[in-house]
Length: 62
Image (cartoon, rainbow, N blue to C red):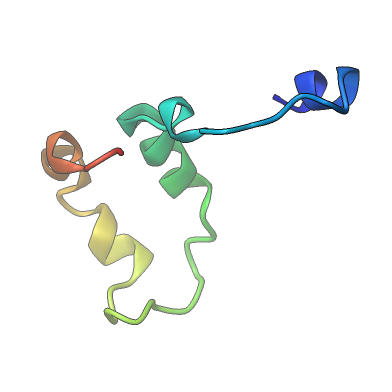
C-alpha cells in the first residue's frame, strides 16, 4: 500500500478493510507489548492470550 501511495500521489484509498483478516489480527496481537497496562476491560495480555485460539473463529472482520 505504501508503495502504491508513493508511486501515484493521485491514488485514492477508499477501503482498507479487505486487508484485515484473522491471521493479521492474531499476528498483531502477538506483537503487542506483553507487559503493557491493562485495557479498559481490565484484561491483561496474558489473560487474553488464554483461549485465543478458541476465540479466533469468532473474531469479526468487517
